[in-house]
Amino acid sequence: MSAIDDDNGKIIIERLFNNIPDSAIICISHNSWINDYFPNKLLLVD
Image (cartoon, rainbow, N blue to C red; front, side, top):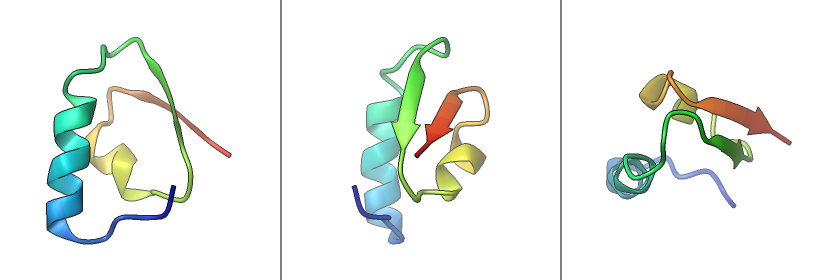
């Protein structure tokens, strides 16, 4: 998954993440801004 830097991409990702429980473990590659948007999620970066 490539990094999405545009606001439209962030909105799409935000909608997806809003459907994921806070207890979920999410694997993200090279998307450092994700943690700022979703600080309550446990993120694993490969």
